[in-house]
Image 1 (cartoon, one colour):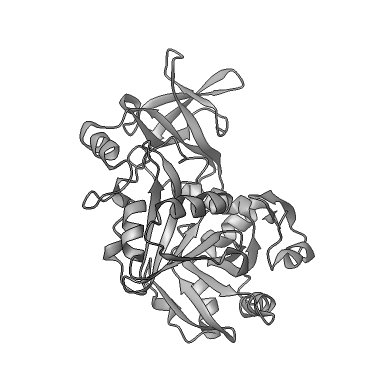
Image 2: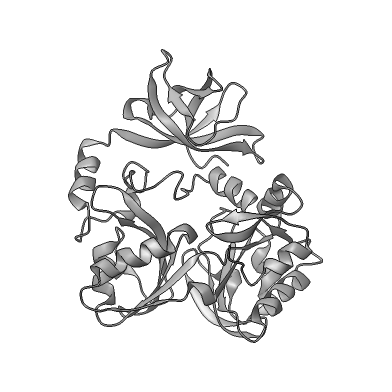
Amino acid sequence: MKNTPFTEKHKALGAKMAEFAGYNMPISYSGINDEHASVRNNAGVFDVSHMGEFIVKGPQALELLQRITTNDVSKLTPGKAQYSCFPNNDGGIVDDLLVYCLEDNNSYMLVVNASNIEKDWNWIQSFNTNSVEMHNISDKTCLLAIQGPNATKILQPLTQVDILNLKYYTFEKGTFAGVDNVLISATGYTGSGGVEIYFEDKDGAADKVWDAIFSAGAAQGIKPVGLGARDTLRLEMGFCLYGNDIDDTTSPIEAGLGWITKFTKDFNSKEIFEKQKSDGADKKLVGFEMVEKGIARQGYEIKDFEGAAIGRVTSGTQSPTLGKAIGMGYVDKQFAAIDSEIFVSIRNTLLKAKVVKMPFA
């Protein structure tokens, strides 16, 4: 099991640690609900250094990325980022990712899920027929996400980069807490604002940055936040988690990700996705609220009033913000309309739920 450069910090703070994607990660510190509220109302710090980062560069870099992602990379200019996915050959998703444009048409950083680092690297290389230069910088890259409505105000004194006015899905490089060449972006996964900071851990940079953030935010009450609250926060926003809501068997059209699927270029499974978009996919990812008391968990069956199976739950939790049980799942398209009545099978009992519009909060 791998550690991040912040593992000892987590332990010293009394974090509940557990294995996630091969890493020893903090699940919670003061409790998921408390940490969740901190991010929604104030600011919290996530160690997400387990994520994968690849540099793809050279004259053919753009052409390669256009072939293997669904979004239109050509629309990016330096300082801009986009959400995208790698489609497989069978109408599914290899992984979802972020694409950062470092240099115009020439150099990009891809941020991929921790559990898919090797899988994604091999997938990209299988299409790299023009020997585009690639570097896997995952093991040497620190990544902290500082999220919440007060996050940028707390962090602004630590950098000359104008993070107070950093627009969504843009980034800048600069000095942060005395550490040079830090990439600061606004591509958050919580829906509460804030930034992410990428930097190399050398000459004690990890300790320096961590300590500076908590010193700057001490008076404001900034808190460390674990992966437990990260999951409840993203679910309230209806953001997909790879391995739960999207995977090798689900398409971006089915998952409501048609907005990152641009048919102005060629990529794997393009014809499958075009047909789904024109004819309508047979199943659709929806959000739902439990009407009857019970929490839907990943893998639970979704049924109709007659008890016939119509889908499955992909994510579910008790929403700390709403105080009610919410979830996401795939259902047959005739049950995907807002306010549709569905039933979740929980311990052999059908409990009523209804389809609602996302985000939940």
